[in-house]
Length: 596
Image 1 (cartoon, rainbow, N blue to C red):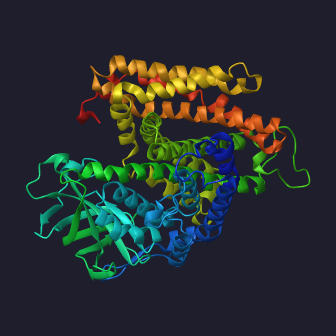
Image 2 (image 1 turned 45 degrees about the vertical axis):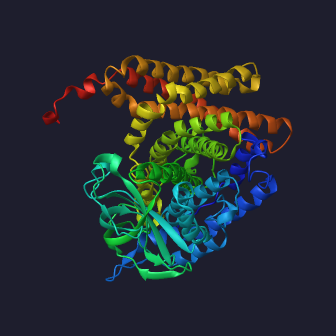
Image 3 (image 1 turned 180 degrees about the horizontal axis):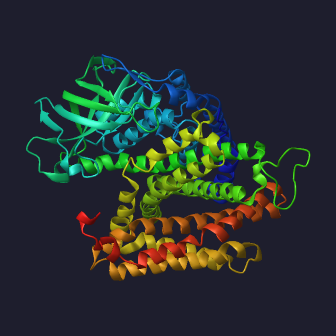
């Protein structure tokens, strides 16, 4: 059976030594998150992930969720107890304000915990993960009454949350939605319509489920300008806060999916269900984007989590599986063959996955730290800079981490040979589960279009210019450091490729928009490679500093080797991406549709 061990030690190194989060002790919640507390929190979170969530991953996948005739859904054996342990530990409210029952700690710690649980058991982690996204939306756009009614119970974990966007005819283009809302005359609305692909839409883990639903109020404008957001609980809430009568919302069926079988992905039917407007009428998309952006970052974390889990199991197998002899002579002469980890191509595969994982983890935490600064800093300039970087990196985190997370799961499966294709080894589950992360919360092509169409030109390109300047300054500051040369020297041509791509698009995309569309995915991955390279440079700087102190020398040496591998063998991909971008859209768009 597959195993999982949360990367607690590496996460603490990134938080304390690479990102130096103690610099932000002036921000609310950070002073409470001392190094000792962070270690205690993440160690316990890692234990929960490894000992409670992970053992249920394979069995949950095999059992799946069951819909009963009355529309109720039963989750796999052990899920309720595991969820209760998560809720009882206060994990739902780790970074939620204390006034609603949370602990108010930095979001960056919660992000680390999200990686642990999604790596241990993606399907199970989605139930609390979606709830945290719903909490975020209500915190920003909910009325005082709505916050008082729903947030304490959701933070406690007694109630869970979902978001309901997609309809059978309406995916990315939400302006096509048909779900309607009719005013009841008492401040509430009756919602009627069908939503599909609703993760955690119905289950037995909590006593109530709080659905956030987008719909169109009768008479509202067509398209996205007429979308409103509503809170629609599974059970209505009594005046005293207790659970009341059942609302007219039900699970019509469970989707039969490629993966995440243990998460109840539901078709949800609203038959005049009572709901209440969240935020302003016809401004629902703006309110829902709070949850969607939260979810996009969380999905990027899921891609990393699956990559890490698959890697750990591939390494364990490669160290034990005997096959062939080393090209330089037997390494285990007392055995019939050498373990496959002696073979260069096996090592290349494993090194690529691990080099990605460690840099992606740094990117994930750096982005979460920017989210903390954007939401907690009192300095307007600091907030704006953090918001800019957060916006620029959101499509990269979602798109690049999930694209690579899936590819890495496939590569890890390859290490097992035929055993990787057999369900009992569990590697196929990582592949199947990782695949959804590239699709939901905006398919990755949409993330790339968001980057090139919105994030890149926003505010005159301010965010991208700030990022380019930050990396160039880092290269200049460390260019004469002999120990850093293997890391900053390769970073410069990669940065040049990114600058050249941005310049080419500025000159060729506005007059011919198809050039932007054809270049979008390559630009997203080009930027992603440069960001990951920048993360490795920052990791190397911290590793060299620890070595100079004589601390953890063997582990730091391993990081430096891994960083050099990334710089030498993975970062040069930027030149390929640039060549594709400069090719433009001519051949992409040349064939008539009927020729395909």
